Image 1 (cartoon, rainbow, N blue to C red):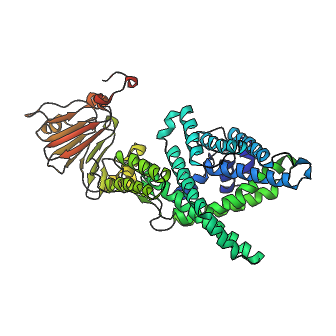
Image 2: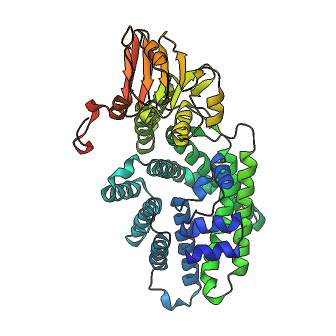
Image 3: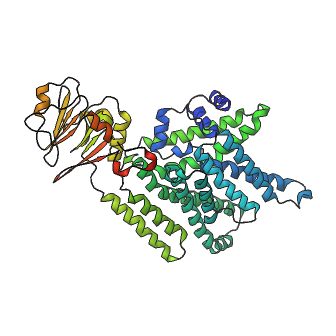
Length: 487
């Protein structure tokens, strides 16, 4: 926290908040507008201390240490500079892990770089699919629930795609490299070729990682960022060439009180990243909501991707069939439940012609945001509550569902007895937040009172031709031994 406070003091405003986030994992000073712009531009991954940051830090330390050892007199010829640099990089990564409070994402990143540098110490290839599998096994052994984390899935999807992609590039490199060497005539040609290779690698990395992580991001967050690729192409090089080196230089110079110029340069790089984020977020259609996917979609995408990455030869393309099947299943997914009832009926949402309509715009904002997001809608809670669909009165609301059933919601504490009794009729779903229904000439066909709502939890209601199908969140049929006794 002392380091975070010092960075915020040295770089006031958004620059210092960003610097504290990427240096020690303190995101408490990040402005909500900046955070949303970074998400809309698909640059929010720059804030989390994960694979990119750990890779930049350890990679720079590794390279600088090798350069420093190469510059020493020949007395160290018997020492493997590569292995010494690997140990130094591991130590730097461990320090970064502890400095950032060892969050789950940072732990995962450290395990991956530790596997890579251990391979260097053992004279094995540092980045391979076997090494990636070992890193995944270690992480899952330490924290099995990581398998269901969006961060675990996206980071390993991106890394697997990149390792497989660069293995294919490496396989074809000899011919390409020989051809490039034949065309090389001067220093200018070498510089141009290096710049072209860097640009090509940047585009390749961004495209492959973006395509690999897009299904997981859409599945978990119900949104896609169409302009994420150009935003990453504009921001990530600055992260690698300016922000990370300047941050490392500031850390080295801080004990001497000379960190000022390095922090200034770091702040200029951060300002560029934030400018790219806000400019991208301001574009029309920068964020496109997508509806929730059926459960098999994630499994099909994962199995298809693994087949594509792990197989050899042309038969590996068969993995695309699994990915295509997942996308087809997603596009053809059935419509969302027509009625959603929150815990205790504190909020009710009905799917109308213009989207989900909420029975009020007070409180329950997290529930409302989740419903609207999973519907594939970007409306605010107040806008969803203002949509036409429900007939509202003092303490009640009503709507006729698609199959002819009527939904009656009584949410007021003081609703006339006569009004309640008149709702007890066939083909009616009566939902009461308080009190109990008073029997009229008919018993309600379906009645959800306070005690019943408490036992069922949140409820999804599907309007089907033969009637209503209720899917409660507390389904006794899905109880587990560790879930407690079914109510």
